[in-house]
Length: 306
Image (cartoon, rainbow, N blue to C red; front, side, top):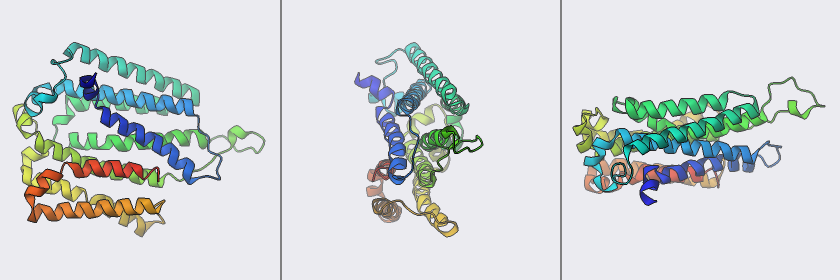
């Protein structure tokens, strides 16, 4: 059971679950006096379909990465050691089909093609990323970095489908009523997650240089060197703070709570400390660099709850 959980990246799936539940909780908490349409069973179906499509993506990624993983992490190898490669392909197809059928159900129920489009896009994106695009310089890292943000956008779009109506308004028909919610903070978290995850992918590629060399994968660390790649990942971690400052200058964007302000300030101080450590304490940095993006993603998600 443990190898199977490792294959589907159970920690990543729990993060997706936390994010989608967090969006629902955040919108309800931030709008206590609004009547918000929220269909919990169907939202549960959306979460389940997202989780199994993500799990399918992890399985197919390991399938195509088998040669490199034998070098980079032989102790964590699941395919061929605990599970036959043919079963991995079958599991990928089965999970994707179930996820897509759920998308059809959701789209039919809510009279929109949104869920069909997003799920079909995600299934193909994960497949082509694993098979081809992962070995394209920058493109592979950018694609996988965008996935956490896509989960947050999808959750927001679900609430928009339920609460924003395109029918002509009539005070006598409640199916024409609309509730317009402020999704800006969720979008802000999604974009910050992209930068943090992009940094995380570069750091992972630094660690995976031996195996990537075997399959001749043109990753960023192999092209510019691990030292410059580490600096690039630290510079990317400064982007959320810069993005926040730009939003403050051009709009009335505000953080939703004091807790969120403290978390973002703490993370930025940690990111700056990492950048300083790059120049004065590189040995210390190598030990903690891989923890910074993961810590940032987890703390960022908690801002949806507090």
